[in-house]
Amino acid sequence: MKILFVLNPHCGKLNGDRDKIAAMADAIQLNFPGADMRLTQAPGHATQLARASVLAGYDASIAIGGDGTINETARGLVGSDTALGVIPNGSGNGFARELGMPLQFAEALVRLQKARPMRCDVGRANGEVFLNLAGVGIEADIAWKFMEHGKNGARGMWPYFKIGAKTAFTYRPKTLEVQADGKTQMLSPLTLVFANGRQYGSNFKIAPEASLTDGELDMVTVADAPKWKLALAAPSFFTDHWRPFGITHTDHVKQAVISCPGEIIYHVDGEPRKTQDRLEITVQPGALQVWKPSL
Image 1 (cartoon, rainbow, N blue to C red):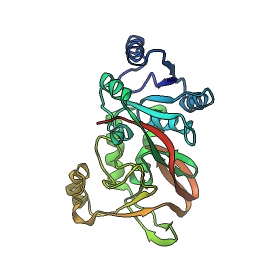
Image 2 (cartoon, helix red, strand yellow):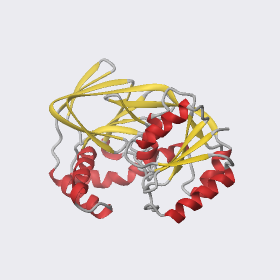
Image 3 (tube, rainbow, N blue to C red):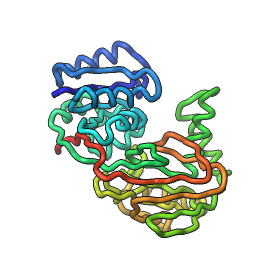
Image 4 (cartoon, rainbow, N blue to C red):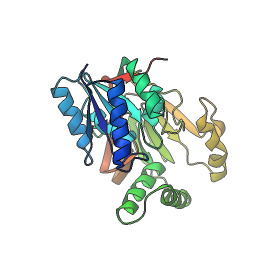
């Protein structure tokens, strides 16, 4: 088989460490003799490498990195017969967890040797691919502010926490017109999420019944409830079904249009975006072939 490994050299704890990268390359050759490995050099490069692998007739492109690297690699493979493989090396690792991939590099390599192909749905937000989640609301605003802060300030968990805490006390939901599968409703949610997979990452399950293969998205509305209710409900998002206080409501949809005059901040697999007046969400059933590890 022809296999390409696409590695983000700055993901996780790598930080461009040449010795660690060389050790990973040796482990890849041990488990997949003759496989190729390429390092991403800039945002969007993983997509280019994946598209090239399709044209060259590769059987699979294996993304090594966080959800951003995995998303970029998938963009280059949608609609092709070249499969997406995943080795998690990020923070939340949402999509890898959905596939059941081990979080340890060596174990993930072994499990990939016995992976089976599976057709996976793909979501799109204004045409852009997402594998797990896209949405509007407080988490999109936090992601945007964190991105802007990172241009001139420090990144990391502590700045993210401070931005998140400040936003939690100042955020005011916008009123949205949402047309979903022919039904129109007016919503003012804390967040509105369109889920292909179940979780943001780290097993925080916003849509515990979502499926990567059902041809639909779970549209989850999180109410702008009092802060004490949200705080008490937070642990429930790490469970599969328990959701107290009626904090969330879920609809199953195939297409939705969000309308709101002016600027709309949204996210695609955690990456912040902006648009004007209108955001369209769709799903492409079975558009991506992925390698899922066998039990």
